[in-house]
Amino acid sequence: MLSKNKLKEMREKRGLSQEKLAELVGVTRQTVISIEGGKYVPSLELALKFSKLFKCKVEDIFDI
Amino acid sequence: MKNNAMKYGFAAVTIIAGLIFSYFHIGERPDIVFGSLGAWLIYVGFITLAIMAVRAIGKNKEKKVDERMEFVAAKAGRVTFVFIIIAAFAVMIADGIKPIAISYYMFMAYMISAIVFVYFVAYKVLLRYN
Image 1 (cartoon, rainbow over the protein chains, first blue to last red):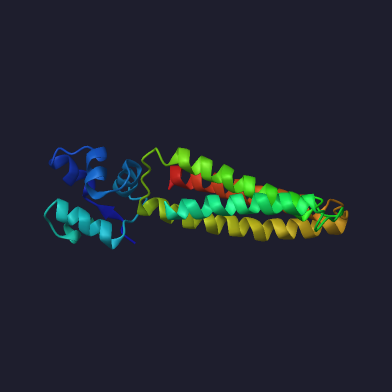
Image 2 (tube, chains in turn purple, red; image 1 turned 90 degrees about the horizontal axis):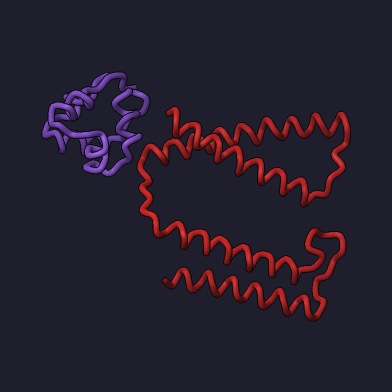
């Protein structure tokens, strides 16, 4: 299970709001909040969408 | 569009069949909940129309369903399943203590309502806190 991620950090670095990020990857804002808070582990598809958006590797955002 | 036509067609055929059955007194039984097959078919037809009307209203709103919602829905389904098991035991025990003397259709109506309610509450709670 993934326990930590840098999603919030990367989002803030790019000046994106939770709502905007959610819109860009096609999920709800609540889902972004849950992922940032470590409550919800995203699917591989969603993790890849984040990595594509931030132009980095999946493991740069998510870690175990 | 074709799907909608099928549903409206189903509702219309059901209501018409219900009216015909009622008119000719076919399938009348006083011991069942609707009294006759015709009344039951009319009920099903109107319920179909009601569901379609509600869905048509809901279609105007853009609703987003993401993977977390699906995950939570699956979890709510599991919670509901556990509830059914526990409720079944509770009903068995309650029936053993004092026999449940309500009609079968009433029992089923209560049970289905309870299942829908538990699923709805479980979904909302899990969506909020998961």
